[in-house]
Structure formats: structure tokens, C-alpha cells
Amino acid sequence: MKLKYLIKDFDYLRAYNSPFKPLKLKWYCGKIALGTPYFYPRRWVKSKENKGYLTVVTKKIGFDFVSLGWKTKYDDYRFEWSPMISFVFFKWQIAVTFVAPHADHYWESWLYYTRETKGTTEDRIAQCRKKAPQIWTTYHPNSTKERIDYYNLILKEKWLKKNISNL
Image (cartoon, rainbow, N blue to C red; front, side, top):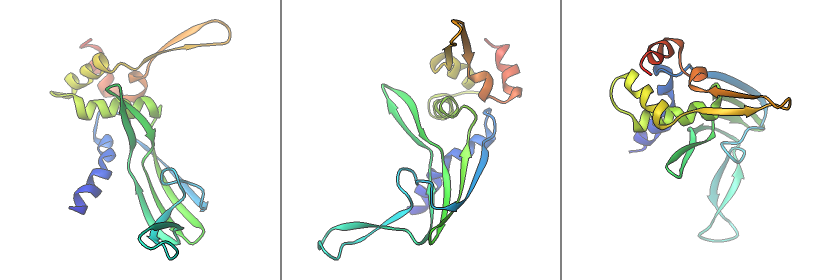
């Protein structure tokens, strides 16, 4: 049962074998500085002062596996934090964060792609573009505006060429 949940925590690795661009690894090595996800690495122990309660203590040695952070809001997927693997040894931390290009757009599109679409890869990308578009307008200080379709920035080149012809 525990293994089932651990495998689910690594679901984001399927992005490597998808039409989305591969994730990059960002390494950190130094004093504890990265939360897992909100707080520094910690663990819960039985409280000595309050029987039946738990208290938080800083983790001395251990691993943390942080899965992709997301939620749904108004039936849309919302990205919250990137996946990470962290190892703590006393006051030191080694961490690997899985970084996506244009992270918000990437992960929200990837979640829609994996959870809401069916059919061939081309069909699924077309469904994403239609039902979960990533077209944004940026307004520049010189009064110009730029329209950006983030699918052009987050999909592998191979799938862009195939999918554009289907639109």
C-alpha cells in the first residue's frame, strides 16, 4: 500500500516520455535552505510536555520526496510547486528540483493532458489546445502587446509540427 503512494508521488516523471519538453534538473548543495515544500525538512515526534500530541523537530538526517504540487480551482488545474528530492545531513542539504520551462503553463497543461484527454497523442494535444488553452497577452511599457501561445514553448518540436497541421 505504501509503495502505491510512493509511485504516485513520482507521477511527474512521465513528463519525460510525453510530447512536453523534458524537465531540467536544478541542483542545490549547502546549508538547509529549501522547503519540502513549505517548511524546512522536519519530522513529527510525540510531545514530552503534552501527552497525546505531536511536536515538530528539525530533521537531522533523512530524505524527502516532494511530489508535484497542484490543486484544482473552478475546474482548472493550478500549479503550486515543482517536484524535488531532498537529502538532509545535520545542517546541510542536497536537493534536486525538477524544473519545467514556463512552469505554470507547463504543469497545468501537462496535468490536463494526463488527466482529461483520450486518444492518440495528436488528438490529446488538440484537446488541450481547445479545452485548456495557454494563450496569454502581455502588455509592454511602450504600449505594445504580445500574444503568446505557451504550447509553442512547452511542447517538443516534433509534436508542434504534427499538431499545427491538424488545427
